[in-house]
Image (cartoon, rainbow, N blue to C red; front, side):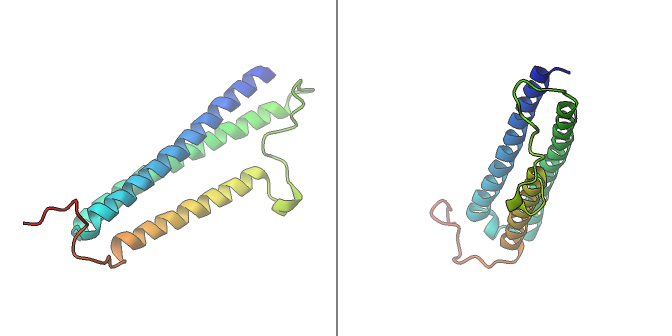
Length: 145
């Protein structure tokens, strides 16, 4: 595989990763809006259904990201087989900067991404099932009988 092919594949995979993260944040933002406008007063069955759908969507995005990670690691392996790359790039995120205390950029990004999405997921579970929302209605968008 040539250097140009590896760089092309790498750029396409990076665009897919950015898309997955973007869609994940879109799902979370839509859930937050739905939680504020409707779900906070919904019966538990509807909140369970909505949270299950969010969970399935985020699990799908996580599985997709896992697969993309395997492909990204594959481009690293292919790159390491190049004898003398013309771009003089030594590798993609596999360096271990001192400020990361021995972690590679990949490992640090996986840790931070997992930590962030885990915290968001737990927060949304808390807001969905435990938090007592103030007020009796969801605001002016609600029509009273």
